Image (cartoon, rainbow, N blue to C red; front, side, top):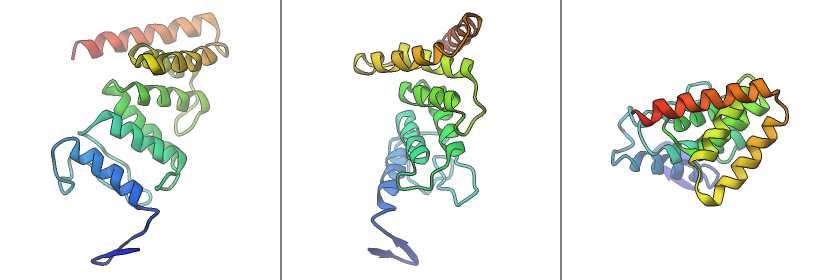
Length: 164
């Protein structure tokens, strides 16, 4: 156990601190700048307005699964959304799964399909088949008009994102 001023850092908190440091340093900024990242206290919102979308999505994964931080589905979904809006396929897929399961967001199969469809389209060759299976699994729970609506929403998002 390390002792830094009055804050105790344990082996359990080190992975979370390392991830936060990675999020902040990806922007070339220092962690003391509040607009880059803010480490919340219990009950506080998590805000990541700048930085690596991949690191933001990974932080969401840590919150979803309670790795080094308290498990919090709502915080995870918020982080996934922030990174998904920046085009990260990992975050898009996990946001889709959050909508499919109702973890941290209201269950919505159309939004689940939309985000999984976007993740499939943007994924690396290695991840594409996996995301496609997840998307198709959600589609099996949906009617054809619902799938069409999910596809329509994904196309609209992709067209708007390409125009940024």
